[in-house]
Length: 229
Image (tube, rainbow, N blue to C red; front, side, top):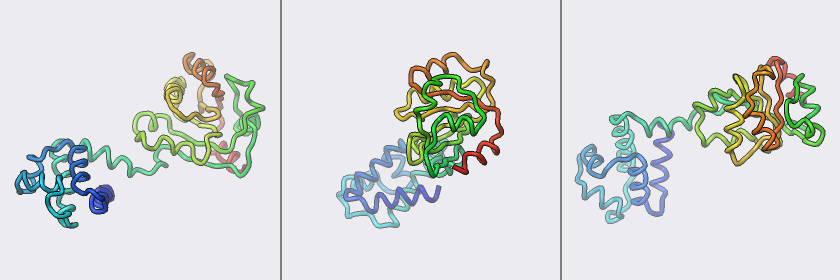
Protein backbone atom coordinates (compact mmCIF):
# COMPACT_ATOMS: atom_id res chain seq x y z
CA UNK A 1 0.00 0.00 0.00
CA UNK A 2 2.89 2.33 0.73
CA UNK A 3 4.01 2.16 -2.91
CA UNK A 4 0.53 3.08 -4.15
CA UNK A 5 0.36 6.02 -1.76
CA UNK A 6 3.75 7.26 -2.98
CA UNK A 7 2.61 6.98 -6.60
CA UNK A 8 -0.50 9.08 -5.93
CA UNK A 9 1.54 11.65 -4.00
CA UNK A 10 4.07 11.80 -6.83
CA UNK A 11 1.34 12.28 -9.42
CA UNK A 12 -0.08 15.24 -7.48
CA UNK A 13 3.32 16.81 -6.83
CA UNK A 14 4.41 16.57 -10.47
CA UNK A 15 1.08 17.55 -11.98
CA UNK A 16 0.78 20.79 -13.94
CA UNK A 17 -2.63 21.14 -12.27
CA UNK A 18 -2.16 19.74 -8.74
CA UNK A 19 -5.55 20.98 -7.56
CA UNK A 20 -7.39 19.09 -10.28
CA UNK A 21 -5.34 15.97 -9.54
CA UNK A 22 -6.16 16.20 -5.83
CA UNK A 23 -9.84 16.53 -6.71
CA UNK A 24 -9.62 13.56 -9.08
CA UNK A 25 -8.26 11.28 -6.38
CA UNK A 26 -10.73 12.52 -3.78
CA UNK A 27 -13.55 11.68 -6.20
CA UNK A 28 -12.04 8.29 -7.06
CA UNK A 29 -12.11 7.46 -3.35
CA UNK A 30 -15.71 8.78 -3.22
CA UNK A 31 -14.86 11.17 -0.37
CA UNK A 32 -16.57 14.54 0.02
CA UNK A 33 -14.79 17.79 0.76
CA UNK A 34 -16.61 17.86 4.09
CA UNK A 35 -15.34 14.39 5.07
CA UNK A 36 -11.80 15.24 4.05
CA UNK A 37 -11.81 18.59 5.84
CA UNK A 38 -13.16 17.00 9.02
CA UNK A 39 -10.49 14.30 8.97
CA UNK A 40 -7.67 16.80 8.37
CA UNK A 41 -9.16 19.26 10.86
CA UNK A 42 -9.19 22.11 8.36
CA UNK A 43 -11.99 24.07 6.73
CA UNK A 44 -13.92 22.96 3.67
CA UNK A 45 -12.95 26.22 1.99
CA UNK A 46 -9.26 25.28 2.38
CA UNK A 47 -9.89 22.02 0.53
CA UNK A 48 -11.83 23.93 -2.12
CA UNK A 49 -9.02 26.47 -2.49
CA UNK A 50 -6.41 23.76 -3.03
CA UNK A 51 -8.56 21.94 -5.58
CA UNK A 52 -9.28 25.18 -7.38
CA UNK A 53 -5.61 26.22 -7.37
CA UNK A 54 -6.49 29.37 -5.42
CA UNK A 55 -3.65 28.57 -3.04
CA UNK A 56 -0.05 28.05 -4.09
CA UNK A 57 0.85 24.51 -5.04
CA UNK A 58 0.75 22.24 -1.96
CA UNK A 59 4.08 21.18 -0.52
CA UNK A 60 5.06 17.56 -0.12
CA UNK A 61 3.97 17.45 3.53
CA UNK A 62 0.47 18.65 2.64
CA UNK A 63 0.26 16.16 -0.21
CA UNK A 64 1.36 13.32 2.08
CA UNK A 65 -1.29 14.28 4.65
CA UNK A 66 -3.90 14.48 1.89
CA UNK A 67 -3.06 11.02 0.48
CA UNK A 68 -2.90 9.41 3.91
CA UNK A 69 -6.29 10.92 4.73
CA UNK A 70 -7.81 9.34 1.61
CA UNK A 71 -6.67 5.89 2.67
CA UNK A 72 -7.61 6.42 6.33
CA UNK A 73 -11.14 7.53 5.44
CA UNK A 74 -11.48 4.71 2.95
CA UNK A 75 -10.41 2.22 5.65
CA UNK A 76 -13.14 3.57 7.93
CA UNK A 77 -15.64 2.86 5.14
CA UNK A 78 -14.44 -0.70 4.59
CA UNK A 79 -11.31 -0.18 2.49
CA UNK A 80 -12.87 -0.99 -0.88
CA UNK A 81 -10.79 1.43 -2.96
CA UNK A 82 -7.58 0.67 -1.07
CA UNK A 83 -8.07 -3.01 -1.82
CA UNK A 84 -8.63 -2.35 -5.53
CA UNK A 85 -5.50 -0.22 -5.79
CA UNK A 86 -3.23 -2.56 -3.82
CA UNK A 87 -4.39 -5.57 -5.85
CA UNK A 88 -2.16 -4.18 -8.59
CA UNK A 89 0.87 -4.77 -6.37
CA UNK A 90 0.50 -8.55 -6.52
CA UNK A 91 3.09 -10.17 -8.81
CA UNK A 92 1.72 -11.62 -12.04
CA UNK A 93 3.34 -14.94 -11.06
CA UNK A 94 0.50 -15.37 -8.56
CA UNK A 95 -1.77 -15.95 -11.56
CA UNK A 96 0.29 -17.00 -14.58
CA UNK A 97 3.74 -17.75 -16.04
CA UNK A 98 4.83 -16.40 -19.43
CA UNK A 99 7.49 -18.13 -21.53
CA UNK A 100 8.83 -17.06 -24.93
CA UNK A 101 10.37 -19.53 -27.37
CA UNK A 102 13.74 -18.92 -29.00
CA UNK A 103 12.19 -20.02 -32.31
CA UNK A 104 8.72 -20.56 -33.72
CA UNK A 105 7.15 -24.03 -33.99
CA UNK A 106 3.96 -25.27 -35.60
CA UNK A 107 0.93 -25.94 -33.44
CA UNK A 108 1.20 -29.57 -34.53
CA UNK A 109 4.71 -29.80 -33.04
CA UNK A 110 3.50 -28.06 -29.91
CA UNK A 111 0.72 -30.63 -29.45
CA UNK A 112 3.19 -33.50 -29.88
CA UNK A 113 5.54 -32.03 -27.28
CA UNK A 114 2.83 -31.86 -24.63
CA UNK A 115 1.32 -35.23 -25.71
CA UNK A 116 -2.01 -33.54 -26.31
CA UNK A 117 -5.09 -34.12 -28.44
CA UNK A 118 -6.66 -31.45 -30.65
CA UNK A 119 -10.42 -31.29 -30.08
CA UNK A 120 -11.41 -28.45 -32.40
CA UNK A 121 -10.00 -26.64 -35.45
CA UNK A 122 -7.46 -29.37 -36.13
CA UNK A 123 -7.15 -28.03 -39.69
CA UNK A 124 -5.08 -25.15 -38.28
CA UNK A 125 -2.44 -27.37 -36.68
CA UNK A 126 -0.02 -27.22 -39.62
CA UNK A 127 -0.45 -23.53 -40.48
CA UNK A 128 -0.40 -21.87 -37.05
CA UNK A 129 3.03 -21.00 -35.68
CA UNK A 130 3.59 -20.67 -31.96
CA UNK A 131 6.20 -18.43 -30.34
CA UNK A 132 5.50 -18.98 -26.66
CA UNK A 133 3.02 -20.11 -24.04
CA UNK A 134 1.36 -18.81 -20.90
CA UNK A 135 0.60 -21.18 -18.03
CA UNK A 136 -2.56 -19.93 -16.32
CA UNK A 137 -4.24 -20.82 -13.04
CA UNK A 138 -7.77 -20.57 -14.43
CA UNK A 139 -9.54 -20.17 -11.08
CA UNK A 140 -7.28 -17.37 -9.85
CA UNK A 141 -7.31 -15.55 -13.18
CA UNK A 142 -11.08 -15.67 -13.60
CA UNK A 143 -11.99 -14.87 -9.99
CA UNK A 144 -9.15 -12.80 -8.56
CA UNK A 145 -6.82 -11.33 -11.17
CA UNK A 146 -7.07 -7.55 -11.70
CA UNK A 147 -8.27 -6.77 -15.21
CA UNK A 148 -5.24 -4.52 -15.73
CA UNK A 149 -3.07 -7.66 -15.81
CA UNK A 150 -4.94 -9.23 -18.72
CA UNK A 151 -2.78 -7.95 -21.57
CA UNK A 152 0.32 -9.21 -19.74
CA UNK A 153 -0.89 -12.76 -20.40
CA UNK A 154 0.32 -12.32 -23.97
CA UNK A 155 3.94 -11.55 -23.18
CA UNK A 156 5.68 -10.13 -26.24
CA UNK A 157 3.37 -11.61 -28.87
CA UNK A 158 -0.18 -12.97 -29.27
CA UNK A 159 0.93 -16.01 -31.31
CA UNK A 160 1.12 -18.19 -28.23
CA UNK A 161 -0.81 -20.93 -26.45
CA UNK A 162 -2.72 -20.41 -23.22
CA UNK A 163 -2.42 -23.48 -20.98
CA UNK A 164 -5.25 -23.40 -18.43
CA UNK A 165 -4.94 -25.50 -15.28
CA UNK A 166 -7.71 -26.22 -12.79
CA UNK A 167 -10.46 -26.43 -15.43
CA UNK A 168 -13.61 -28.51 -15.01
CA UNK A 169 -15.48 -28.09 -18.32
CA UNK A 170 -13.52 -25.42 -20.20
CA UNK A 171 -16.50 -23.08 -20.47
CA UNK A 172 -15.23 -20.22 -18.29
CA UNK A 173 -11.83 -19.75 -20.02
CA UNK A 174 -13.43 -19.79 -23.47
CA UNK A 175 -16.17 -17.34 -22.46
CA UNK A 176 -13.50 -14.95 -21.16
CA UNK A 177 -11.57 -15.22 -24.42
CA UNK A 178 -14.75 -14.74 -26.46
CA UNK A 179 -15.24 -11.22 -25.06
CA UNK A 180 -11.54 -10.31 -24.99
CA UNK A 181 -10.09 -8.04 -27.70
CA UNK A 182 -6.91 -10.14 -27.93
CA UNK A 183 -6.91 -13.89 -28.63
CA UNK A 184 -4.24 -16.58 -28.21
CA UNK A 185 -3.40 -18.89 -31.10
CA UNK A 186 -4.68 -21.93 -29.22
CA UNK A 187 -5.87 -23.08 -25.81
CA UNK A 188 -4.82 -26.10 -23.76
CA UNK A 189 -7.26 -27.36 -21.13
CA UNK A 190 -5.01 -29.30 -18.81
CA UNK A 191 -6.27 -32.47 -17.16
CA UNK A 192 -9.71 -32.32 -18.77
CA UNK A 193 -11.36 -35.44 -20.18
CA UNK A 194 -12.57 -34.68 -23.74
CA UNK A 195 -16.06 -36.01 -22.93
CA UNK A 196 -16.42 -33.40 -20.18
CA UNK A 197 -15.62 -30.49 -22.47
CA UNK A 198 -18.51 -28.04 -22.52
CA UNK A 199 -20.36 -27.73 -25.84
CA UNK A 200 -20.41 -23.95 -25.59
CA UNK A 201 -16.63 -23.94 -25.20
CA UNK A 202 -16.33 -25.89 -28.45
CA UNK A 203 -18.74 -23.55 -30.25
CA UNK A 204 -16.74 -20.50 -29.11
CA UNK A 205 -13.54 -22.20 -30.22
CA UNK A 206 -14.98 -22.87 -33.67
CA UNK A 207 -16.38 -19.36 -34.03
CA UNK A 208 -13.13 -17.67 -32.95
CA UNK A 209 -10.95 -20.23 -34.75
CA UNK A 210 -9.01 -20.95 -31.57
CA UNK A 211 -8.05 -24.64 -31.42
CA UNK A 212 -8.75 -26.43 -28.15
CA UNK A 213 -6.24 -29.04 -27.01
CA UNK A 214 -6.51 -31.36 -24.02
CA UNK A 215 -3.66 -33.15 -22.27
CA UNK A 216 -3.05 -35.02 -19.05
CA UNK A 217 0.71 -34.72 -19.22
CA UNK A 218 2.12 -33.40 -15.94
CA UNK A 219 2.77 -29.66 -15.78
CA UNK A 220 6.42 -30.13 -14.84
CA UNK A 221 6.91 -32.44 -17.83
CA UNK A 222 5.18 -29.94 -20.13
CA UNK A 223 7.36 -27.09 -18.91
CA UNK A 224 10.53 -29.15 -19.27
CA UNK A 225 9.65 -30.01 -22.88
CA UNK A 226 8.54 -26.51 -23.91
CA UNK A 227 11.27 -24.55 -22.15
CA UNK A 228 13.89 -26.24 -24.32
CA UNK A 229 12.51 -24.56 -27.44
